[in-house]
Length: 189
Image (cartoon, rainbow, N blue to C red; front, top):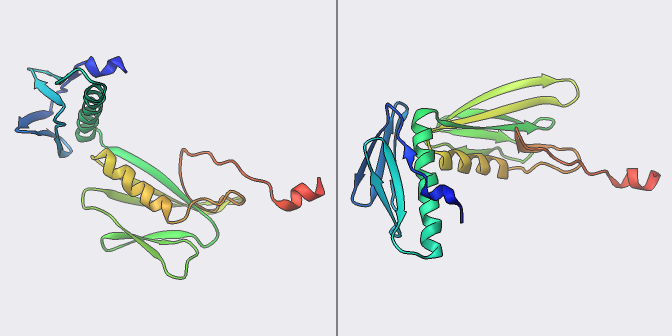
């Protein structure tokens, strides 16, 4: 088990943390987040530190202690800095556009796929023209909840996974793809 679960979390200035019943609420400059506390762990708030303790000495309690610590740390980071994920749409005729409350994706299907965005997630689109790859559309998702930002990014990527031969599709900006060689290249060699 990781020893990080025992380390206390320092509460930065400008962040207010309240604990009511089994719910922890974090309020900061960008907004507020809530998280239910696991029944196998206990959260202790001191003046400028938060410590998480396991209620019993089992492996599952230790795991929940570490998970709660990470979730609280992510909540504090979210209300201070926020989180963002960037996706790239690559392919001829592939594009995206905002429509009402959602994001319309034109990815080679008969009808455009629409992904509904929650109110607390902001989406920015940017088209970059390049000679070798054609038009690349960059989708940047921003929000204070790390899990929501990641879930929406995964949902957008799932609409058209990248092709291993031509790399057409939706991928993360920091993702590296291995390109497969086609049958022609194998036969000619």
